[in-house]
Amino acid sequence: MSRIFNFSAGPATLPEPVLAQVRDELLDFHGEGMGVMEMSHRDKPFMAVAAEAEADLRALMNIPENYKVLFLQGGATGQFSFIPQNLLAGKTRADYVLTGDWGKKAAKAAKAFCSVNIAATSEEQKFTRIPERAGWKLNPDAAYVHITPNETIHGVEFLETPDVGDVPLVGDFSSTILSRPVDVSKYGLIYAGAQKNIGPAGLTIVIVRDDLIGKTTPELPAIFNYAEQAANDSMLNTPPTFAWYMAGLVFKYLLANGGLERMAEINQRKAAKLYAYIDGEAFYSNPVDPACRSWMNLPFTLADAALDGAFLQGAKAAGLSGLKGHRAVGGMRASIYNAMPEAGVDALIDYMKQFAKTNG
Image 1: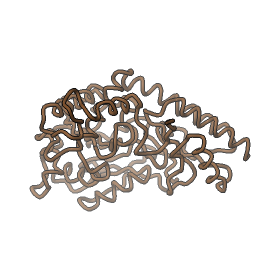
Image 2 (image 1 turned 135 degrees about the horizontal axis):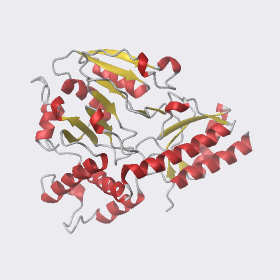
Image 3 (image 1 turned 180 degrees about the vertical axis):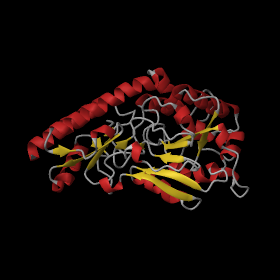
Image 4 (image 1 turned 90 degrees about the vertical axis):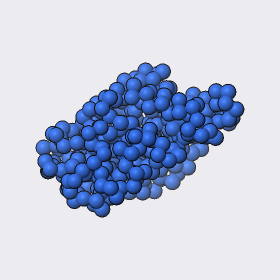
């Protein structure tokens, strides 16, 4: 078997050493005579897995003690609805800054629970930039301000955390979490689906400040209530145990390989290399403002869209998968998350050079 380079936006490629360890432990986890996916979440071996995963994530991200770390289900899309229900705390308004389709979807879901103020949007610019902070129309009485630090579809990213004053900042970090250090204390809540930089699909991480939870209405089901989940160590019901276990292995892998500072160096270098080639070759183009280009998701188009099919077919033959762009944008998209080795980026550039030479 020969592994390919998987540029899919998610579920995405995972570190090979982690996959090898999972393979070795699949039938017998630490002498238990069964794998993690078979054991009860209440058994001591899995309880230890869960506790270690939280401790390692706290160490990786330097999460302050006054934040809860929750391992939940429902994906980031589920959080679009759970966040307003947990954070409104009697208020009726929330601010949303739209920099792509995922921000739009989050705002649409929140409208079922509160008045949503679109504080800023770059939709008229086809989501190719971040709206200037000075132009944001924030409401000081809002329960929170929601941003999407990295838009997976459009390849737009906040390279700095915006200052929104005393209103809690909420960030959907699904496609950028663990790619570099982040000051958690600048956020009231961080959430992320696991299937890009953390592990398998099915797990969602929520990091939330203590003072923001426990103020929901009695009607909110306990399973959606952050305070209830925190009080039960994210085990109010059977959690996604196998995904939680694999996430813990990824955390250990990152800690053993230089942490998030080292990942930031590698990720910035990978992205800069691919952007430099695209910008220097007339056959390809990237529409995003260079001041806010994503490190994780790099959309690009060919000079002739009629060649898209041939490009993808040739890429697959060359062992390069998952490059088709999202239908909302078209063209191509290379997602180069933590587990994408630099060799994968080099292989993509080599293929792009050959394709341009043949078809340009």
